Image (tube, rainbow, N blue to C red; front, side, top):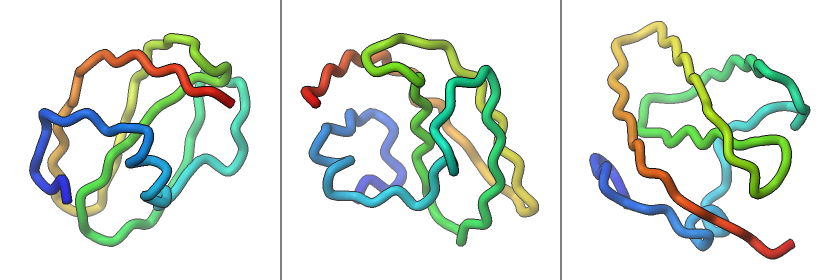
Length: 84
């Protein structure tokens, strides 16, 4: 649906209707979280998040691939407050 697009904002509805392909095994409050995933070729969106809801944070992502891979930064700051 969003293949090749970079200037988009994913709404709450997107995350409610699209299942995560992979996620951290445990959601813990650590400075660094490391995971390995084996994914088929395709386009993926990595969504970093803080441990505490509604808290801003800076993130550094490192992605390694055995095959040639391209990445694009979508550096739009967004504000989102979701009711629990």
